[in-house]
Length: 288
Image 1 (cartoon, rainbow, N blue to C red):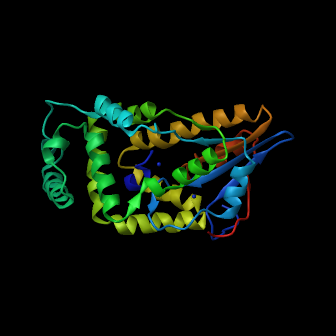
Image 2 (cartoon, rainbow, N blue to C red):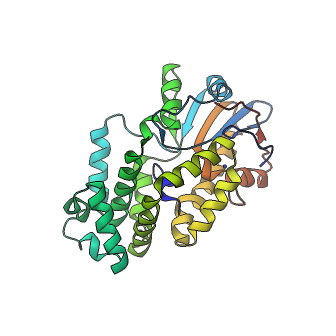
C-alpha cells in the first residue's frame, strides 16, 4: 500500500497532459468538476493551475473527502478517544521479530517516544510514524491541495462540505482487524525507508495527471492487505459515485476534490461514473 500517499485521508487516461487531472460531468443544468488531489505537498510547492481555480470559482460548493474541524484540539480529542489503547501489548510485540528491529530503529531515528506509541492502536501508530516521516522531508498537509482549495472557497463565501466525517474516516482504520493494522504498520516501515523517492514518484504522476498509473501502483501494493484496499478505496469509491449520481439530479455547480488515487483504474471513479452513463470529460489545463 502507498500509505504515505494515503495518509491524510485517507488514499491519476486521455490525453496525457503535464498538469493534474481535472474532469467535468455535466448535463443541461448540472456541472460537477472532479479534481484529483494529493493531500500533502512540499511547503514550497507552486500554486494550483489557474484552470482549476477558475472551475472552483464557478462552482456553488466545494466538496472534499472530509472537512477537518478548525479547532485542532477537537481533532486531537477525537484521535485520543478512538485511537488510544492504554494497557495493550507494547507496539514492538505486535509485529514480527524482523519488523520489530526495524520499528525500533525507525522510531528512534524519528525521535518519537515509544511509550506514546505503545498507547496507540496499531493503525494510529502507523499513521503517526508516516506523518513524522513526511514532515522530515518537508511534506505538509498545511500546504496540501485541499487546504489551498478550502482557503479559496471560504474567501469567496462558498460552502465547504465533506463526503465523510472525520470520525468516519478514523473508524475506517479502527474497525480493521489487528492483523491488517499490523500489515499497515509493517508496510509503513518499508515506505519510511524510501519516503523521498516514494513521494517524488507520486508527485510526478500527480503533476502529469496520470491517474491510471497511480491506480496501478496502489493495486500492486494493496495485495498485502486486500481488506485495507477495499475499505479505503473500493468501498468509498462506490459510495461517492452514488453521491455524485444523486447530485446530477439537481441543478447547480459543484467542485469535488478527492485523492487522485480514487480516480483511475477499473474500480476508480471515472470508470464507475461511465458505468452509470455519466461521461467525465477531461479538461485541458496548463501546468502550474
